[in-house]
Image (tube, rainbow, N blue to C red; front, side, top):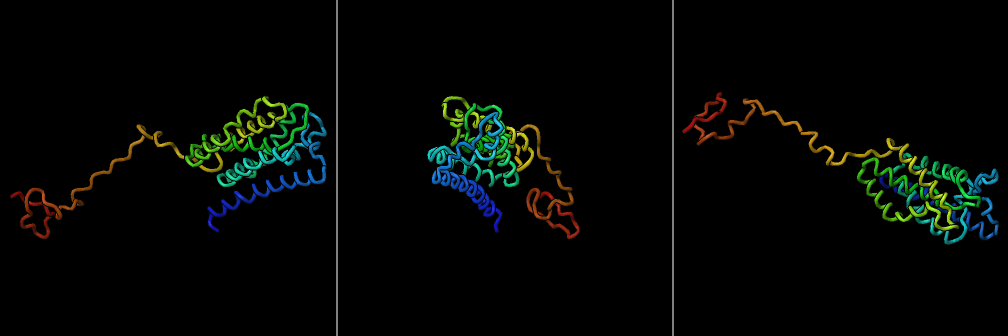
Length: 237
């Protein structure tokens, strides 16, 4: 299989499986009325530790689920396509470490949803593309910033029913991952202006006289009577 096609396949397959799992959990929860909400993350309670595992899979309603589905699929797809060797590690750290931070700093309430992972991925993709000085990844970074730039307001306690703690924890996790993996993954290039004034191409040394194609050119006027053993320099008329 072609490398580019394989990367595209992986960037769709794994995010798609993860998103399908989240939708299946929601369908089972609503169909059987299991109230899985109570298995979410509850800060600083021993029973709330289970939410570190289950909370990203649980959503409070269909609007909540739909709002998280597209950015989760898009950002995780970009991660698997451009950072295929780091993708699983980044996903796992975002998944668990975000939950640990929320358990430490969160309000005494149930926190559910995959928004913490979304913030972690968006931050990682944006910051990593910038610090690597990789033009392709920088384009992805600006795409993320343009598409999800308004997400920055989600880290502030503006809406009571929104877990800004999950958003802030995801952002901090993404920053840490971008810094920790700055030397791994796609390699960047220096910008074109960084070499100006500092490096000059070595000038080619002039060829030796005997290597010059004198026999093919006239110095001044027509070539006259060049013997076979002559170096070929013409006489002046």
